[in-house]
Image 1 (cartoon, one colour):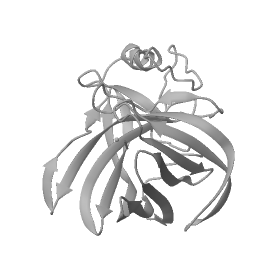
Image 2 (cartoon, rainbow, N blue to C red):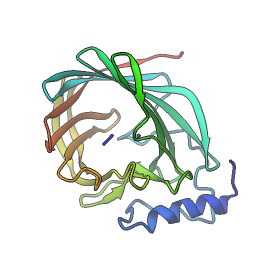
Image 3 (cartoon, one colour):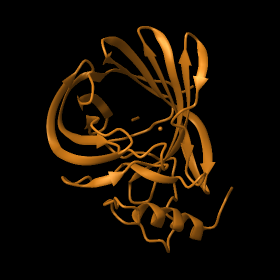
Image 4 (cartoon, rainbow, N blue to C red):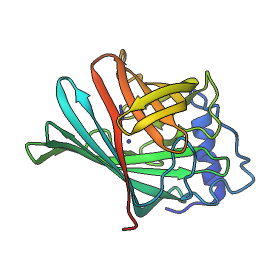
Length: 239
C-alpha cells in the first residue's frame, strides 16, 4: 500500500466515477455546477497540509530493517484531467539503501477534501532501477482520483484513496478523532486515526495517525507484517 485539459463536465464525471464505485466516498459533496477546484494548490487541510518547500522526515522499521523516508512537498505542479496538482517527492531507504522514489500528485477541492490523482513510482535494488510497480494516473487506463483526506472526517467514514483497478485500490476508514500519540517529533492530542487496507493485499492492515496542523505522524502495520514509521522532523525551505 502506499501513490489534457477538459471542460468542467469532464471534471464532474471524474467525481461521479469515484462516488459511484462499490465503496462510495462519504466526504462533503461539491456541486458539479460550480468549479470544484478553484485553488487546487492551496492544500491546507489540517490533517494533510502540503506547503511547498516542506520536508517531512520519518524513521522506522520494516521486517527487521531500518527505514528512512523523506516526503518533500515540491514547488512543481502537474495538470491532470484539467486540475493543477501539487507534486510531492517521496523517497524511501531501507538499511541505508534507496529502495523507492515516488512522485505523488495531490489537489484540494473547494470543500477541503484532498484528492490523490496518482503517482509515478520507481523501485531500486542495489542502486539500479528494477521497475515502476504501483504507478497510476487518474484518467489513464480506467483509473480515477481518490480522496486521501476528507475535509471533515467522521468516525465510520470509509473512502477510496486510490482507484486504479488491479494496481492501486487503497481505502481508509476513520476510527477515531481524539487519539493521543507521541512520536520522536513530539506529543499530540486530538489525533485522527484511520485503518488503511486494500483488496489487492487481503490480510494487510495499517493504522495511520494524523495530527491537526501537522499531518501524518505515525503508521503501524497491525496485520500482515511488522512495520512502524514515525515522524522525526519537519524541515521548511523556500527553495
